[in-house]
Length: 261
Image 1 (cartoon, rainbow, N blue to C red):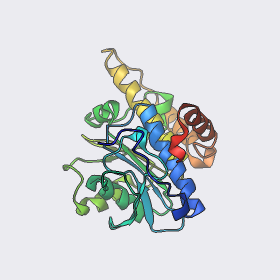
Image 2 (cartoon, rainbow, N blue to C red):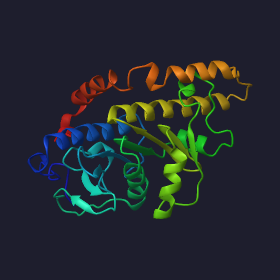
Image 3 (cartoon, rainbow, N blue to C red):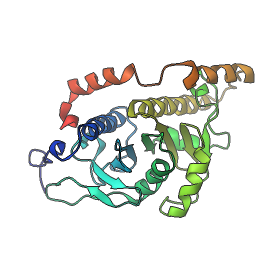
Protein backbone atom coordinates (compact mmCIF):
# COMPACT_ATOMS: atom_id res chain seq x y z
CA UNK A 1 0.00 0.00 0.00
CA UNK A 2 1.43 3.36 -1.08
CA UNK A 3 1.07 6.37 1.16
CA UNK A 4 0.13 9.83 -0.12
CA UNK A 5 3.75 10.91 -0.52
CA UNK A 6 4.56 7.88 -2.69
CA UNK A 7 1.40 8.11 -4.80
CA UNK A 8 2.52 10.56 -7.46
CA UNK A 9 1.25 10.16 -10.99
CA UNK A 10 3.79 11.20 -13.66
CA UNK A 11 2.77 14.32 -15.56
CA UNK A 12 0.87 13.81 -18.80
CA UNK A 13 1.56 17.34 -20.01
CA UNK A 14 4.25 16.30 -22.50
CA UNK A 15 2.03 13.50 -23.88
CA UNK A 16 -0.98 15.61 -24.93
CA UNK A 17 -1.76 18.75 -26.93
CA UNK A 18 -1.96 22.14 -25.18
CA UNK A 19 -5.73 22.12 -25.76
CA UNK A 20 -6.13 18.73 -24.13
CA UNK A 21 -3.92 19.75 -21.22
CA UNK A 22 -6.12 22.77 -20.53
CA UNK A 23 -9.21 20.55 -20.70
CA UNK A 24 -7.55 18.21 -18.21
CA UNK A 25 -6.84 21.05 -15.78
CA UNK A 26 -10.41 22.33 -15.97
CA UNK A 27 -11.91 18.85 -15.59
CA UNK A 28 -9.68 18.06 -12.61
CA UNK A 29 -10.78 21.36 -11.08
CA UNK A 30 -14.39 20.38 -11.64
CA UNK A 31 -13.88 17.10 -9.78
CA UNK A 32 -12.30 18.95 -6.86
CA UNK A 33 -15.19 21.44 -6.81
CA UNK A 34 -17.82 18.70 -6.90
CA UNK A 35 -16.15 17.23 -3.82
CA UNK A 36 -15.68 20.62 -2.15
CA UNK A 37 -19.39 21.37 -2.47
CA UNK A 38 -20.35 17.92 -1.09
CA UNK A 39 -21.65 16.39 -4.30
CA UNK A 40 -19.25 13.43 -4.57
CA UNK A 41 -19.95 9.79 -3.67
CA UNK A 42 -16.65 8.15 -2.70
CA UNK A 43 -15.17 6.79 -5.97
CA UNK A 44 -18.56 6.62 -7.74
CA UNK A 45 -20.04 8.95 -10.37
CA UNK A 46 -18.34 10.83 -13.14
CA UNK A 47 -17.66 14.11 -14.88
CA UNK A 48 -16.38 13.88 -18.44
CA UNK A 49 -15.18 16.31 -21.10
CA UNK A 50 -14.71 15.93 -24.83
CA UNK A 51 -11.09 16.24 -25.95
CA UNK A 52 -10.92 19.23 -28.34
CA UNK A 53 -10.67 18.11 -31.96
CA UNK A 54 -11.02 14.39 -31.18
CA UNK A 55 -13.74 11.73 -30.94
CA UNK A 56 -12.57 10.94 -27.41
CA UNK A 57 -13.32 12.13 -23.92
CA UNK A 58 -11.63 12.28 -20.52
CA UNK A 59 -13.08 10.59 -17.44
CA UNK A 60 -11.98 9.72 -13.92
CA UNK A 61 -10.09 6.51 -13.07
CA UNK A 62 -12.32 4.13 -11.12
CA UNK A 63 -10.67 3.93 -7.71
CA UNK A 64 -9.66 7.51 -7.00
CA UNK A 65 -11.54 9.97 -4.79
CA UNK A 66 -12.61 13.25 -6.35
CA UNK A 67 -10.28 15.12 -4.02
CA UNK A 68 -7.35 13.18 -5.57
CA UNK A 69 -8.13 13.83 -9.22
CA UNK A 70 -5.48 15.77 -11.12
CA UNK A 71 -4.95 16.73 -14.75
CA UNK A 72 -2.58 13.79 -15.23
CA UNK A 73 -4.79 11.17 -13.58
CA UNK A 74 -7.64 11.36 -16.10
CA UNK A 75 -8.13 8.51 -18.59
CA UNK A 76 -8.85 9.18 -22.27
CA UNK A 77 -11.28 6.79 -23.97
CA UNK A 78 -13.17 6.68 -27.27
CA UNK A 79 -16.92 6.31 -27.77
CA UNK A 80 -16.60 2.51 -27.78
CA UNK A 81 -14.85 2.47 -24.41
CA UNK A 82 -11.38 1.73 -25.73
CA UNK A 83 -8.61 3.30 -23.67
CA UNK A 84 -6.68 5.74 -25.86
CA UNK A 85 -4.35 7.19 -23.24
CA UNK A 86 -3.88 6.06 -19.67
CA UNK A 87 -1.65 7.46 -16.91
CA UNK A 88 1.05 5.40 -15.26
CA UNK A 89 -0.66 4.77 -11.93
CA UNK A 90 1.81 3.82 -9.19
CA UNK A 91 1.13 0.45 -7.58
CA UNK A 92 -2.26 -0.18 -9.19
CA UNK A 93 -4.08 -0.36 -12.52
CA UNK A 94 -7.20 1.76 -12.48
CA UNK A 95 -9.74 1.44 -15.28
CA UNK A 96 -13.04 3.10 -16.24
CA UNK A 97 -16.35 2.32 -14.55
CA UNK A 98 -18.76 0.59 -16.95
CA UNK A 99 -21.83 2.65 -16.00
CA UNK A 100 -19.84 5.85 -16.40
CA UNK A 101 -18.77 4.85 -19.90
CA UNK A 102 -22.32 3.93 -20.96
CA UNK A 103 -23.91 7.18 -19.76
CA UNK A 104 -21.21 9.61 -20.83
CA UNK A 105 -20.30 8.05 -24.18
CA UNK A 106 -23.97 8.06 -25.20
CA UNK A 107 -24.21 11.83 -24.82
CA UNK A 108 -20.75 12.70 -26.18
CA UNK A 109 -21.32 10.55 -29.26
CA UNK A 110 -24.80 11.88 -30.04
CA UNK A 111 -24.39 15.55 -29.11
CA UNK A 112 -21.22 17.10 -30.50
CA UNK A 113 -22.14 20.56 -29.20
CA UNK A 114 -21.90 19.26 -25.63
CA UNK A 115 -18.42 19.33 -24.15
CA UNK A 116 -19.03 18.27 -20.55
CA UNK A 117 -21.33 15.78 -18.80
CA UNK A 118 -21.71 15.45 -15.01
CA UNK A 119 -23.61 12.81 -13.02
CA UNK A 120 -24.09 12.66 -9.24
CA UNK A 121 -25.69 10.56 -6.50
CA UNK A 122 -26.29 13.19 -3.83
CA UNK A 123 -28.93 12.68 -1.15
CA UNK A 124 -31.02 15.70 -2.28
CA UNK A 125 -30.81 14.66 -5.92
CA UNK A 126 -31.69 11.05 -5.18
CA UNK A 127 -34.54 12.15 -2.90
CA UNK A 128 -36.12 14.35 -5.56
CA UNK A 129 -35.58 11.60 -8.15
CA UNK A 130 -37.98 9.39 -6.15
CA UNK A 131 -40.81 11.94 -6.01
CA UNK A 132 -43.72 11.64 -8.43
CA UNK A 133 -43.91 15.43 -8.59
CA UNK A 134 -40.29 15.67 -9.68
CA UNK A 135 -38.50 18.99 -9.29
CA UNK A 136 -40.92 21.79 -8.40
CA UNK A 137 -40.43 25.34 -9.74
CA UNK A 138 -40.96 26.75 -6.26
CA UNK A 139 -37.89 29.01 -6.05
CA UNK A 140 -36.22 31.39 -8.46
CA UNK A 141 -33.28 28.98 -8.70
CA UNK A 142 -35.39 25.92 -9.47
CA UNK A 143 -37.35 27.86 -12.13
CA UNK A 144 -34.18 27.70 -14.20
CA UNK A 145 -35.00 23.97 -14.51
CA UNK A 146 -38.75 24.34 -15.02
CA UNK A 147 -38.52 22.25 -18.20
CA UNK A 148 -36.05 19.66 -16.93
CA UNK A 149 -35.85 16.23 -18.55
CA UNK A 150 -36.57 12.88 -16.85
CA UNK A 151 -35.24 9.39 -17.49
CA UNK A 152 -37.06 6.38 -15.99
CA UNK A 153 -35.08 3.84 -13.99
CA UNK A 154 -34.51 0.38 -15.48
CA UNK A 155 -31.59 -0.83 -13.37
CA UNK A 156 -27.90 -0.01 -13.17
CA UNK A 157 -26.87 1.60 -16.46
CA UNK A 158 -24.66 -1.16 -17.86
CA UNK A 159 -26.44 -2.04 -21.11
CA UNK A 160 -25.56 -0.14 -24.29
CA UNK A 161 -29.20 -0.50 -25.38
CA UNK A 162 -30.10 2.20 -22.86
CA UNK A 163 -27.95 4.82 -24.58
CA UNK A 164 -30.54 5.71 -27.19
CA UNK A 165 -33.19 6.28 -24.52
CA UNK A 166 -30.82 8.42 -22.42
CA UNK A 167 -30.13 10.72 -25.37
CA UNK A 168 -33.79 10.87 -26.37
CA UNK A 169 -34.95 11.72 -22.85
CA UNK A 170 -32.33 14.44 -22.42
CA UNK A 171 -33.44 16.12 -25.64
CA UNK A 172 -32.19 19.69 -25.91
CA UNK A 173 -32.14 20.32 -22.16
CA UNK A 174 -28.97 20.81 -20.14
CA UNK A 175 -30.27 18.95 -17.08
CA UNK A 176 -32.02 15.65 -16.44
CA UNK A 177 -33.25 13.80 -13.37
CA UNK A 178 -32.54 10.08 -13.58
CA UNK A 179 -35.56 8.77 -11.68
CA UNK A 180 -34.75 6.67 -8.59
CA UNK A 181 -31.09 7.35 -9.35
CA UNK A 182 -29.65 10.88 -9.36
CA UNK A 183 -28.87 14.01 -11.34
CA UNK A 184 -27.22 14.71 -14.70
CA UNK A 185 -26.18 18.00 -16.28
CA UNK A 186 -24.43 18.88 -19.53
CA UNK A 187 -22.77 22.00 -20.88
CA UNK A 188 -20.97 23.51 -23.82
CA UNK A 189 -18.09 24.08 -21.40
CA UNK A 190 -16.95 22.62 -18.09
CA UNK A 191 -17.80 25.84 -16.18
CA UNK A 192 -21.29 25.82 -17.70
CA UNK A 193 -21.88 22.19 -16.75
CA UNK A 194 -20.65 22.68 -13.17
CA UNK A 195 -22.78 25.79 -12.75
CA UNK A 196 -25.87 23.84 -13.81
CA UNK A 197 -24.99 20.98 -11.45
CA UNK A 198 -24.46 23.30 -8.48
CA UNK A 199 -27.75 25.11 -9.09
CA UNK A 200 -29.70 21.90 -9.68
CA UNK A 201 -28.32 20.46 -6.45
CA UNK A 202 -29.31 23.65 -4.62
CA UNK A 203 -32.81 23.43 -6.10
CA UNK A 204 -33.19 19.86 -4.83
CA UNK A 205 -31.93 20.78 -1.36
CA UNK A 206 -34.37 23.67 -1.14
CA UNK A 207 -37.31 21.55 -2.25
CA UNK A 208 -36.58 18.81 0.29
CA UNK A 209 -36.18 21.42 3.05
CA UNK A 210 -39.48 23.10 2.14
CA UNK A 211 -41.38 19.82 1.88
CA UNK A 212 -39.99 18.76 5.26
CA UNK A 213 -41.68 21.73 6.95
CA UNK A 214 -45.10 20.06 6.57
CA UNK A 215 -46.66 23.35 5.57
CA UNK A 216 -48.38 24.37 2.32
CA UNK A 217 -45.98 25.79 -0.25
CA UNK A 218 -46.67 28.91 -2.28
CA UNK A 219 -47.38 28.07 -5.93
CA UNK A 220 -45.91 30.56 -8.35
CA UNK A 221 -48.24 31.36 -11.31
CA UNK A 222 -47.35 29.50 -14.49
CA UNK A 223 -46.76 32.68 -16.49
CA UNK A 224 -44.26 33.91 -13.89
CA UNK A 225 -42.47 30.56 -13.95
CA UNK A 226 -42.28 30.73 -17.74
CA UNK A 227 -40.96 34.31 -17.67
CA UNK A 228 -38.33 33.39 -15.08
CA UNK A 229 -37.30 30.29 -17.05
CA UNK A 230 -36.81 32.43 -20.14
CA UNK A 231 -34.49 34.74 -18.21
CA UNK A 232 -32.14 31.78 -17.72
CA UNK A 233 -32.00 30.78 -21.40
CA UNK A 234 -28.93 31.35 -23.65
CA UNK A 235 -30.67 33.93 -25.82
CA UNK A 236 -31.32 36.21 -22.84
CA UNK A 237 -28.09 36.04 -20.83
CA UNK A 238 -24.36 35.35 -21.01
CA UNK A 239 -23.27 31.69 -20.77
CA UNK A 240 -23.23 30.35 -17.24
CA UNK A 241 -19.84 29.90 -15.62
CA UNK A 242 -18.05 32.74 -17.41
CA UNK A 243 -17.78 34.93 -14.33
CA UNK A 244 -17.66 32.38 -11.53
CA UNK A 245 -15.15 29.86 -12.97
CA UNK A 246 -12.02 32.04 -12.58
CA UNK A 247 -13.05 32.79 -8.99
CA UNK A 248 -13.59 29.09 -8.31
CA UNK A 249 -10.14 28.28 -9.68
CA UNK A 250 -8.63 30.92 -7.40
CA UNK A 251 -10.43 29.26 -4.51
CA UNK A 252 -8.97 25.87 -5.43
CA UNK A 253 -5.50 27.34 -5.85
CA UNK A 254 -5.68 28.72 -2.32
CA UNK A 255 -6.81 25.35 -0.92
CA UNK A 256 -4.71 22.89 -2.96
CA UNK A 257 -3.36 23.60 -6.46
CA UNK A 258 -2.35 19.97 -7.07
CA UNK A 259 -5.32 19.51 -9.42
CA UNK A 260 -3.11 21.24 -12.01
CA UNK A 261 -0.42 18.51 -11.86
